[in-house]
Length: 448
Image (cartoon, rainbow, N blue to C red):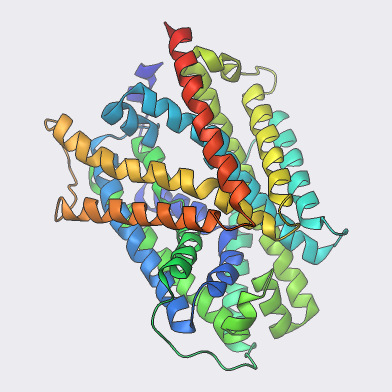
């Protein structure tokens, strides 16, 4: 099984890989998080500064990942880095967290985005968003079980809908819409807690560039091109995000944004009337569906790999010849995601589900992201003979800055999760990760 890694052929150009990164990062979150960031920013200037800072933080992380991905090109990405730096136990816990918290939490999070905008089109009652979220998971998991493959035309259509939605928001916000309330002047950054919460949502919107590690083995001349892919992608993403948020500010104002449950729909309603709001809601809902489907697809394959590596999860390593799909992995993933939709509905209905999923996933995500930075130091010391075509500049200061950023975001995500409304999400997320520890000992015994 391990030898198959060596025969992977590089088939992705810089443009191909960049398009994949852009497609993963620029998702449905940019239509959801600006309202939450506005609620935690003290002024318009702080709001925009948070987005610029998010791009800078992502660039610092990209420098570290460029070294890891070029020195260790492997489809396992972080799983492979942890295996080499910390051993099999840490890699197991990461795979467990990805299966039960990170990936499934992302599915539920995107499902709530779909539900919020689908509710703008056809409201069904008090729990409309949660109902739509659950239906999207059931239907898309079912389609994957039936072996409905994602053709290139389907992916291109979903990406086109996403880009079209963003272009419409930018054009309408900067051309037609105009806020009737004065925009707050730039002030000093918000207090540490509030600004930290804002950055949790900002970096959630930037999340996904690190998935480049999982395509490193398939990139042409990875030693030279990986850094290009990461740097250009993050630069383009930052520019797009700034334009989108300038449109939101121009069209709605910071105060109205902070109270919005569907900020893009509210902007289009202000600019083009109810028809514009419905149109952009449909586009965003379709975009969210594409993100859900892609996350279901890749998540199930990761779970399948875990089942092949560890006997304890052997039931996940079964492949259906009839449907050519990892059936058990898909079923378990869908069941966990549906349970998370229920969890997101418990504190408060509707819109709050998205925020609860952020509380559920963020602490665990940032913990392992911090470990990625630590792994860079460990591998430099442990395997100095490994060629490193790209080396992080200003070592060790840049990796130390990356670790400090991750540590600050881990603290901020815990501070956010400690709020009364969403503490249940973080408690469950951390508890699920801790459950992986006794499972690790059981997996050891099973392997031996």
